[in-house]
Amino acid sequence: MNEPRVNVIPSSINLFSTNTQTRNQEIRIPGGTFIKKEVKNLSSRDQLLFQRFGQGPIQKVPYKLIHEAFEAQASANPNSIAVEHLGESITYKELNDQANKLAFKLEREGVGKGDNVGLFMKRSIPMIVGILAILKVGAAYVPQYVGVTPKKQLLHIIDEASIKVILTMEDLIEDIPLVAGCVYMAVDEMMKPDIENGEGVEPYKSKEIVDGNDRAFIIFTSGTTGPPNGVQVSHRNVCNILLTAPGNLGMRPGLKVGQILNIAFDMMAWEVLGCLGNGATLVIRGKNIQETVEKVDIVISTPSILSTMDAEKCKNVKRVAVAGEPCPRTLADKWGAFCAFHNSCGPTETTIINTAQRYYPTDELLTIGKPTPNNTVYILDKNLKPCPIGEIGEMWAGGDCVTLGYLGNVKLNKARYKPDPFLGNGRKMFRTRDLGRWTANGELEHFGRTDDQVKIKGFRIELDSVSAVLESIPSCKRAVALKYDSKTLIAFVSPETIDEDKAKEEILDALPYFCVPERIVPMKELPMTSRGKIDKRTLMNIAKNILR
Image 1 (cartoon, rainbow, N blue to C red):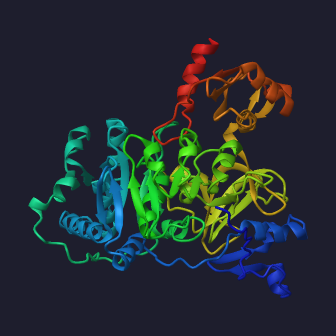
Image 2: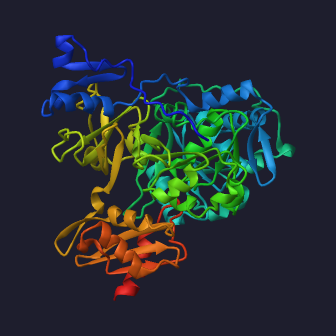
Image 3: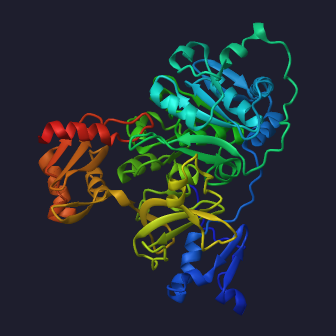
C-alpha cells in the first residue's frame, strides 16, 4: 500500500513573520502562544526549527465528545456492523440502543457527570455497550480485565477512583471483590431480550452538560513499579488523537479494526473508540490473536505482540500502528513491505500517542515521527531549557494531548506535569522521561528512557542501544538488555536458535566493548506482560537463576 509522502507545515504559523513585536516576543497559534523569550538560548536558526519541528499540524476536531462521534456514525450508518465477536455481531443502531438503555439504568443508580464507573470485564460485546453507556451519562469508565488483574489491585482501584457502580458480566461477578456500598450490574443480563422492557430506546441525553474537559476514562498503570496510578483522560484528549489523522488510521465504514489488546491498556481505547468514532467494524479477538489479525484491515499493537504474528498470513492488513515500546526495524520492514506501517510513541499521560511516523522500508531511519495534530514536543535539558536541534535531551509533551493528571496524587502531578512556558495561557506540559533528538527533516529519534541509561563498571550504557543492535540481526524477533547489578549486563533474545557468541560479535562491531552483555540468553519467546510488552520483571527473575 504505497502512499505519497506529505510533509505538513501548519499554515497558520508564520515562521518568518516580519512583524517586529511577534518576532521578538511570541508567535500566536491556535490554542496558545509560542513565547519566543523562552528559546533565547538557541541560535536564530534553531529557534525557528524548535517551533517548526515541535508544533504538530493545527487541525479542527469534528466532535468534542467521543461518544457523540459514535452516535453520528450510528445515525449515518445504522445497519452497518459495529462489533463482531466469536460469531456474534451487533449493528450500530442496535449498539446505540443498548447503550442508551444501559445509560438510563446508570442514571437511576445515581451515576452522572464526574463519576467514575468500574468496567470490570472480559472482551465481549457487553464490554462495548458498557463503555458507551458510561460515556453517555457523563461519567468516566475505569477498565480492568477480570481474571488478569489481582483482586487486591481491583480493591485498590475501587478505592482510589471512588467507584460506586461496577459494570461486569454475570459469570465474572464472583471473581470481583465485593465492596459494601458498591452496585454491581451484569451488562449481559440486561441485554437479554426476555428482560427488555422497552425503556431507554429513545436517545439518551445527559441531564448535565458534558464538555471536552470532562473525564472520558481513567487508565491505571500496571503497578509493576509500585501502586497503580490512575491517569485521567478527557474527551478533548481522546477526540484530538482519534478523530484526526494520522491517529484515526484511515478508519471508515467498510473497514475492520482488530481489538486484540488488554482492556486495561490505553491503546485499547485506540482500537475501540477510534473504530466506533470513525464508523468501522470492530472485530474482538478470541484466544487466537492470529485468527483475528488475518481477517481485519487495521491492526494496533505493541511490537512484542506483532512479532508473534505470521506476517505472511496477514497480507489482508492495510494499516498497522505500533506503540508502547521500541520497535525493531526488522519488524517494521517486514510489515511495511505490504501495508502502511506507523511507528508511534507516547505514554498514557499524553493520550495513547503524541508522535507518529508513516514508515517506509526505504527510509533512512525508523523514527517515532512528528507531533500529532494540535500537540507539541520539546527536547529540553535538565534545566528545562531547549536543546540545540540535533542534540539529545528529554522529551516533554504539550498541547491537547496532555491529560488531566494522576488521580489523587498531588506529589506525582507536581513532578511530571509542569506549566508549559512555550505555549503559555495556563497550558501544561508533561515529562515523558523519553530521550530523543530532532533529525534534519524534523522527525524524532528515540533514545530510550532516562531510567534506561545505566552505568556498568563505571561506563554509561544505553540499554535500548544494545537491544537495537541485537534486533538488527536478521533472525532476531525481539531482544532486551537489562542491568543485573553494577557490574553485570545481561540480554535476552528470541528465538532460541540465535547463537550467543555471534550475537556478542554483532554488538562488539557496533558498540564499545563495555556494551557487550555477560550473557545473551536465547528463548523461544520473550515473556510479555498482560498489556503486551516485554516482561522485564520476569526476565530479571530468570537472570537471577542464570547468574547466581
